[in-house]
Each structure stands twice: as C-alpha cells, then as structure tokens.
Image (spheres, rainbow, N blue to C red):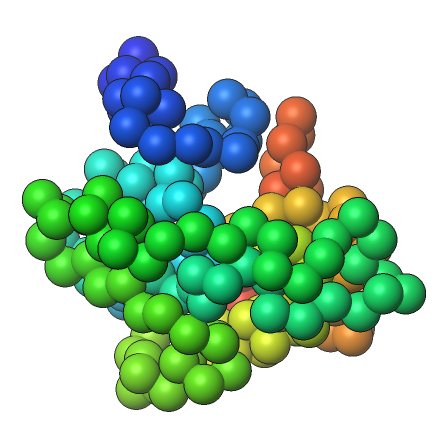
Length: 196
C-alpha cells in the first residue's frame, strides 16, 4: 500500500511541479484515499500548477473533484499577516492546468476568485477538502465555506498552518479544533473535532 502511494507521488512529480514535501504528499494521499468511501464530493482551493490535485485525482475513485484557483496568483495579501507573500504570486496558466486533467473523469477546474466561484458548489456536501492558499483572507473564506458544506464524516486538510495568515484565520474560529499531522505543515479539521 505504501509503495503504491510512493509510485503515485513519483508519477505526479514527473508530470508537474509539486510544492509539497514527500511526507506532506503521502499524508494528503492517505487522507484523500480514506475519504473516497465517504459521502460527498472532493475539493481543492489553491491549485497552482495542479500537483496536489493530481495526487487527489489518483485516489479519489468516482468522486467529483472541484478545483478552485484564480490562476492569477494570490488575489489579495494582508501586509501585516501574510509576510513573504505578494499579490500575483503562484500564478499559472489555466490551460496548462486543464491539460493535466484531460484524462481524468469528474474533475472540474473552476477559475476565478473563490468568493465568487464558490456559488457553483453551494448545493454540494464534501467529504474531503484540501486548502492550500497561504494567506489570511483566502484561508478564512475557504474554511468558513467548507465547514458549512462538510459532510458529518468529512475532513478539511489545511496546508501551511504555521503561516501567520493561516494561524490568524484559524484563530477566528474559536471552537475549531485541529489535529496536526506529524512531520508536515498540515492540520486536519473534521466536524467531530470542531464540535467537541
């Protein structure tokens, strides 16, 4: 099983840039695979070049996967919180990313500002959500939306939980409990942990 995940990781690294470390990529693969038997769709906010979305696509089974990104880079930065990031950072060609998923079924790439594009999935529930947005406002918007659309057995995986903007976004959600995934910069949120 672990070898299969290593093979998937190696294959994805050969096809596109993947900014996750190996332990982070394996953690993402394991959690996404575990979620593939649960009720609800999959989503990712912060696609960049599509590396982590490709990992998810390899283990999602028949689940719909919705990929959200502006493809113009980080849309807005709070200079007091989002140190080291700038507006427009991590931009990528929408067409390049679309091409990565041409052989995958049920993968929907949705370009634009998430505050405007989230309406496309407003009637859906989710069993797995990967949020990799790096900055405060994007994180806060994404977390709030998906917490209200998460199936009771679903999980939200948040990357870069040590970044000041991400920590601040999480601090606004006072009752939120998060499990840190060892040897990674990931935090895992579920409704079970959020409720107590």
